[in-house]
Image (cartoon, rainbow over all chains, first blue to last red; front, side, top):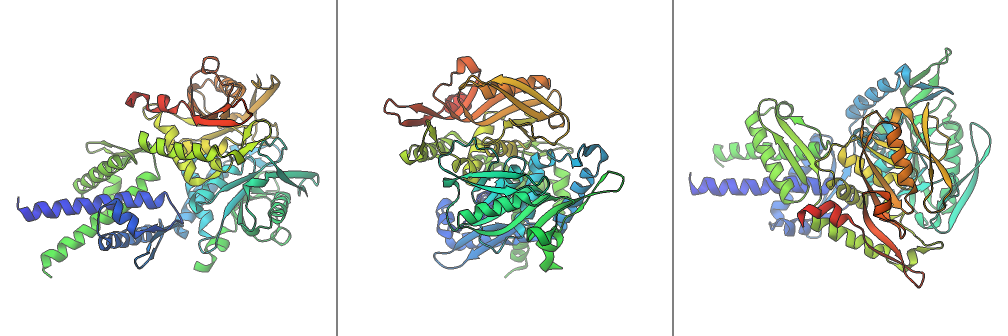
Length: 286
Length: 286
């Protein structure tokens, strides 16, 4: 074996290992600018080599629909991973979810559909999180807000890909988190007055807040969460719900995104179809 | 530029792109055997090349403490990513968390410490999840069980790295998820009788269940969750808590793992120190 070949191989392995570690490093830190100098030091490599590595990572992330790697040129430059999902991947995944949900054995008394397993499945949550954040690629989001209990996992999935804090409001007052802020709101379905509380420390003033929850039915919850956002002088960036109920009405409850839609059939069954995500998230790509 | 060089470069880029995509693919599917044939087809490459790629990924994951890539040789072989964290990385992270928690401004009336921000921070949750699952590397876990509300994010982080369903028990009976199973238990701190409920569909019989929650205080919650596991004829693999309260006692509540420990000081302050994770998770490495 020639010295040349040996040298070539050892260089190749070095780049290979950089690429593997760099991919892991970026994937674990979405929306965070990692300086070129950081990678150069981490791998004891020239910044020019790191730049080439990042070009490969960027190209592969784009070709495989993993996300955008935003590269900032110059001495103080670096790379930032911005997760998204492509429309075809989202559609394929959502079709599969809709088929699962339309299984008649999921129909529960009271017109509910069992969906906790889907909202507790890590692989599905990763897809759902990526679908949700794709809509807010170019917007600043500082926190994801949800209300206990069932909305927490999907909200956490979105907060993970946005890499911003998850803030949980609660219906009970059993909060041992110091001073709290509560709002009253009228439940859209039962027309009862309800109360929603969050810890004062959990949300900073002037934050840009994204609401994520499992279900929008009568619109009461969204009104409650919106009131909380106003109480904190925060800005509502948008609201995304896994499922939209039969009585939802975008005119009445503002501009929201839903991944699936549940409609009562005349025979008492439920029919689950695509939500408005196609238009809301991928609308510009049409 | 010689034809040779050109050919060499184009081959190099191909492997590079495979490595980046393969890393992403494996990281998103922990504990899942990905067949060699799948990667060979995905990249239109020979299985021998894929084998070499996997050797590089495996070596890098190991060197960087990302996790184990278990490779299964042979025609029906493949690779499986098993996440873990190294003791040094865990200790460095936990020291940082303990320093944050010991800030006196976090002390709340009633002897509580504000920690919801830590349990809602996606980067910290990724570290916490990896620390928790490191203890159960060689055990079969089929589900992660927690109880609403504050324990959900950290339980979800663990379930994500184990790639198994997250199952949420609730204290309220406001469950619209079909038939439920409830147990009564005595709250360890207040000595009141409490009730905990989960949907019957959410947990399969004979599952191996890992309990993950934010806080163990009087041991009541762990007793309730253990009773639920028995009701379902499931096996308890272990229990991990973010924080262990002053009154916890491993003798009384069985074998659990805690990441931090909270102790009341004579002056009314709280002192947060390392939990027993060092011994429980990394004990064998001592």
